[in-house]
Length: 193
Image 1 (tube, rainbow, N blue to C red):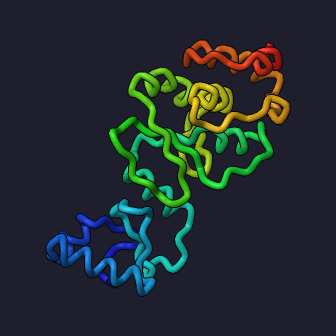
Image 2 (cartoon, rainbow, N blue to C red):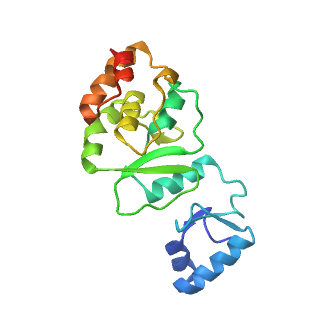
Image 3 (spheres, one colour):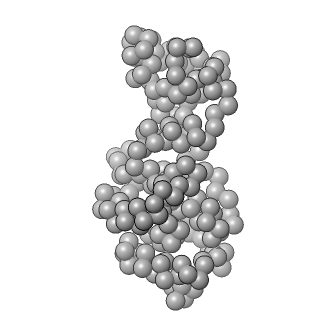
């Protein structure tokens, strides 16, 4: 275990040790049971070496997320809370990733798939934010994060009375609605007009 890095993948473990997939799976399961390693998520195939990293920090989890989902962008209620637009504290970070047929679950993250065209639409806004990172991730601007929430019927939608949209951002919410082609609730339109 001392020769393994602080964060490693199943494939990397097999390569380093020369174990077959079956032998590696048995070994990792035993180490996990003994508390020597921790999985980044169920069936993620990414592990934290507890000998080298006794405490798994948020930067470790972000690294695992970006390894699995290089396109990850912070979105939704995580952005709104960080910007002070809502007071509710999300239990997990919401991230948007390039759509796939299935998603690997990672501890601490709520994964939302978006199409390539969605990423093209928001690219300019995310790039305009420069190197602004929230919790170590590229992030949607708050106005787009709010609009995107309303564009996803499965997502949590904040009550308009609980939103604190800064005056200078209200027009940006409306232009974000046009950009993403999302029909906002009448109460939110009224708030932002």
